[in-house]
Length: 270
Image 1: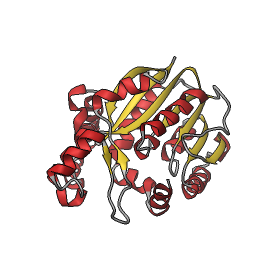
Image 2: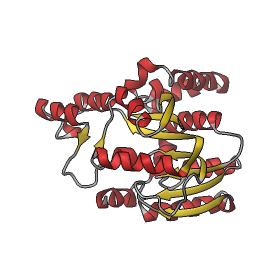
Image 3: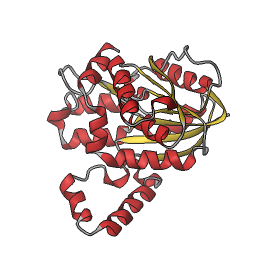
Image 4: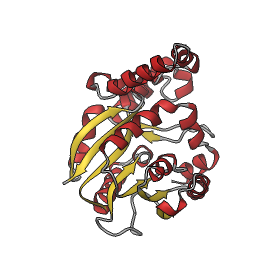
């Protein structure tokens, strides 16, 4: 996991969600709409804490974990900057596969919006989901992000030189068989695991969750450029709000899930 830590030591994840806000807007909409009105929430693999800080601002008590110590430090600073530091019960540098600092059935709900795509072995993914299950109270909701094999195939076909070794038919076939992407280039996004859409619900259900819904975090708008968004902003605030409403509504359309680079699984601990 050292490569993951090194990548996020350099990468501005908070800024990414500001620059590409549709993913954050859609995820937060579904998280807010389904959470109980109050409670203790775990943000596991939180990065610099953008979701955790927003939920704290809404009044939730939070616990935050992330693999990268510098991200945990950044999350503390952001919580202080937004005046919600007292809402946090703890900040931990921790691997999602080992949340031993937290007792069983400790939180009312949990987010895990990053770890699964950095865990390239099934054993690692199962360990992380088992830990999420352990620390969540019975009946508690979990919100888990995965990356889509279908969308990454699209990216590889459209920009093959950017996604080596998926610049050859052999490379693409190997990716489709394994779901695993690796490269040797410094400074790029880490190697990752991409789910078949059809395997997400059964995987989570096999670890003790009841599936509620699976949504496309970027909906049908993930490929839109800033200039294309500007067109709708120029139509006026009301038109822009209605377009966002349409995009959010479309995020639940099962036929468009393959267009989203990130999927959000919502399940309930049974």
